[in-house]
Image (spheres, rainbow, N blue to C red):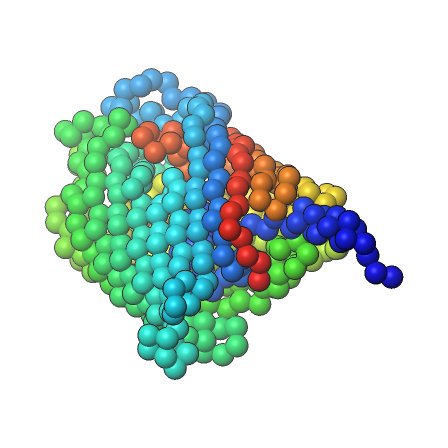
Length: 401
């Protein structure tokens, strides 16, 4: 039986309501994935809101020389990000992508016609203007501070990749990075702690990615399959001088190696229910001390971060996703000659309310019993075991696949 124009319009509106799929959620979603599943061929998405934190026990004082002052405090700050993607950019019909958020900046262009022969050429610029570093160690799972400081890094990368077989993508390319470091309000005085000097680095990066993800066309979200991304780096640098706490300073090695991996796995449980497993991990040279103390992820030269999530679609316009969260950190001890392994556990809840295909409300709450969690501000290292967020998402110029 044919539908009336009014019925067809209503059906289209409901489809848009059920949809409102998600684009890139973070800087690391973009740089870790080479050929991730994208529900949109073109999109401009802006998200803005407020992010907050609550510490189990606040710092006892504001004196940076006090080793107990670690940035643990209650607070609320702004948060936001913007993402753009166009898979038919210019007459060459390449893919242009850009991202800007508190966690980083990214601009990239990929073209499969420059070299031909099914080879994809990528040009990427990456930047992290607001980096925090936390030098210290865990004592009975409680983080003890040696010295905190801030930094920034900017990178250019050119990659060449192709499918080795259906679903398996391999990419290799060189990169160049410039790094700089500065004292913060939590940095001990220079006679107690020396921050590193800025330096340049260059190296080669290898990506291997296997993807079998299937998109639910009705909802525009992953419903089955996985994406496994592996990254390896070999890097050289011109760093000089030592840094660290008085009596224990070290120099960076002139060459280091790094490896990291990411797994996004979707397991359907019912039409409106899907299990999600998000796992990240890394392993690098133990002497690569700066990499070990980056504060946006678990500390250490070996680390892991896993979330087990249950995404539930409630009606036509809401998703509710409870999750459990675990982290692993292997970090040097106070003497600097050995290391210790620590496990942290927590959980939380994330939700989206889709008012239309263009506007959504996004909120989440997360708890983890780790003293070192990402900062909620760019001008100050402020963090706590409890984190929460509420914001609005606006999508413009969208074109579904």
